Image (cartoon, rainbow, N blue to C red):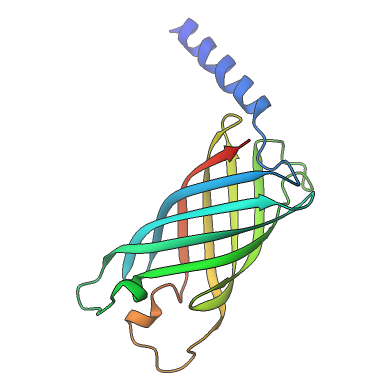
Length: 165
């Protein structure tokens, strides 16, 4: 048991030392995970490209698979895609190479909003993430049906984060 525990500590200690959550310009991250919101749950994916020491731009998309039966939401209501910009604060805050916190803004098919997230990398290419997002301005601000509220409310995403290059 002691040998197993020692090997485990060495393995995670080295992988944490090697891991880098954000490398600056040229950094590429792909995330895939679960999208949770009121009256629906689905899948999401995002891609971010570093364009500066602490700034990245990217695209994210989500599709709601499980929608409450009372909602009449077709493909367009269940699908959303957004352009996004992030400010990476992990190194600024001195959190260590494997951990990053990133607030950002996004423009989607349904709204203009903000998000905040965190990534933790166990190794150079594999980590986990969690994000929360909310609209600042909706394109249709009054008299929205319950189906039009999808992607137009508080959204929580979490899943796997993968490092490219």
